[in-house]
Image (cartoon, rainbow, N blue to C red):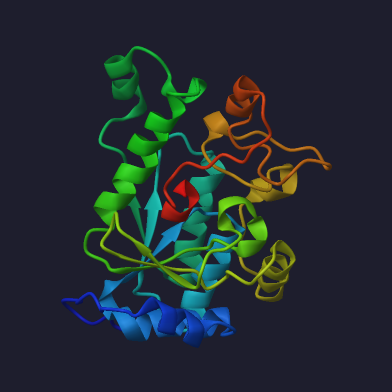
Length: 249
C-alpha cells in the first residue's frame, strides 16, 4: 500500500481517541494509525521481540511502506544489525537506519572518556546516541508506533493507547499496550517471526553491547540493562535511555 504524500498533523482529542481505541486489537490500532496519519505514520524499532511483532503486523496489514526508524548507536551487538537485515529481506519492510552525529571515536576524543561507564555521563551518551538521532529522524512524521507494554511495569504501567510526545510535535501509539511478554512470544511463534538471537542466550532486554548483560533466572527482565549504573547507585530501580518520552516521567 502506498503512503499518502505531504502528511498533515491531525488535531486529536486524546480522551475520546483513547476511549475509542481501548479494547481494540493491536492490528486494529495500527490500522487506525495508518488511516489517521497516512504518510505521517512511522514506527520506532528497538529490534527486540515487541519490535519484531510490530514489524510483522505492518507486513500482515500490507503497510510495508511505513517507515521503521532504527537508531544504530554504533554500540549495538552484531546480532542486532543482523536481525534488521533479516526483517528487511523476509518482509520487504521499510527499515531506515539513522546514526548519531559523532561516531564513538569522535565522542571519546571530545569528552576524553567513555561516557557510558558512569552515572551522570551515561545519560548524555544515551541522549546523543539514541534520543537526538531519533528526534531528527522523526521530524517528517506525526504518529509513531511503539512497542511499549503496560505489563513491563515501572514508568510504562499506565501508558495510554495514544499519548502526546511534545519533543516531536506528534503522538506515540502503543498497539501492544495490553499484551504481555507471553502474548508477544505466542504471536512470534505462531507467525514464525525472526527474533533477536540473544533473547535465547539470557538477554530478555537488549540495548547497546556496552550497557547490556545477561540476567539470571530469578532477576527482572531489565536487570541486565545498565547493570553497572545500578551498582554505582546501589539500587535495583529500572533505568531507561529516554528515547521513549513516557519513560522520563
